Length: 472
Image 1: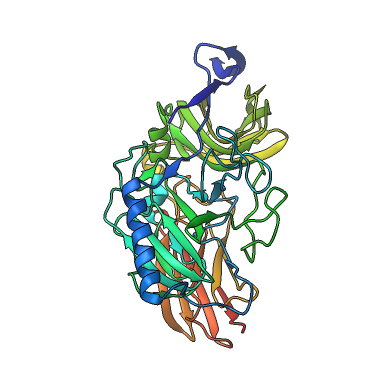
Image 2 (image 1 turned 180 degrees about the vertical axis):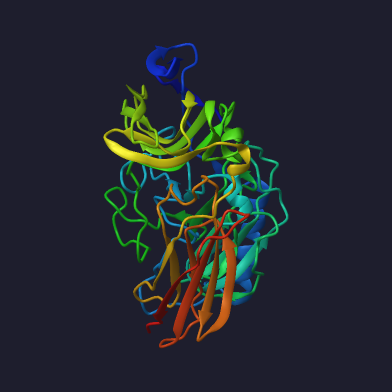
């Protein structure tokens, strides 16, 4: 998967002249802005034949044209079947390609959030570190499990047609089948013949089979052909979604951290595995500080400014420039290095403005000795339970900034504990900012409670609790 790399126009370094700061441009070692190619995936010919045979055998057993049932209401998916929040810890990178002309693409919204020949919706998570924690995949609607496969390696980053994927195939009724692909190995939680409700956990997000990024490929099939479930200017008619996922064009920062020393990301594998040691604690004195920021929908040639403030609020670094991308970068990251004299113990601040938006305003601390750089627990969060209209499942959402979730920039996991009438009915630890309680686990009028505990893997933050009464 090729990279297209653009260099920032200049690397800003601070040189020290006694106690005074002098800012000077240096082109010897520029920062690096990298556009990451969109994920690409597929189904091997062997597995495609296996799934098609399983579907045919299932339909034959049920009788010609039989499905999991026909609803009186129009067919709808009530939600996108992956834990998390789209436009934050999830990002829909690809829809189906509706353009039949080779080497020319068009999604349902007449834009280019797809690639040639793509047949489903791809929703990525941010890294393999989040995959290791776990990001659940749910049934988008009730139905009957038709076929599953598990046990395949799940950290693929290259296109290899010999690789098999872990997957679940569900008959969702009215002739529609949902295909859920590229799951984490050992995570498939349902079996053929099993009846599931909307929100039933099927497995975990991974990168198994023909996949080069941890993500969910969700595909809709009917009459042995793929279907675009979304409706828009380039795909008119009824949407198959109760709450249709939008094309997310907003510019935002998906991740940010500092580290001691420079960050080395020689290729996209290094970017996805994200093995740098994150920190927000630096020992007093001259230090090299590395920075990484992951960006979504970076505008063309966006201007940026970086400020570093000491504990007295004085600016000790203020540099500005502009990126050199000639097109919007849907997925990109920027790494940078600072040589700083951290001469004062206390709380400093790192601020970054891109295209007029204050994306980062992050505190970091300077300590007198290494033993004072102790790990700190994640920040406090809030929780909220929602129940979509005409749906019996519930969603528990973490209310927290996407970036400022931990004072040390650690990756945070969340343990969701669901109680119905004060009885635990689901408990899961996830990297996602939202979780789902499957339909049927709470009846109308039941008191439902969701407790969320954030953790950085070493320390837990304060628990947050939300409570509602389930609606009909």
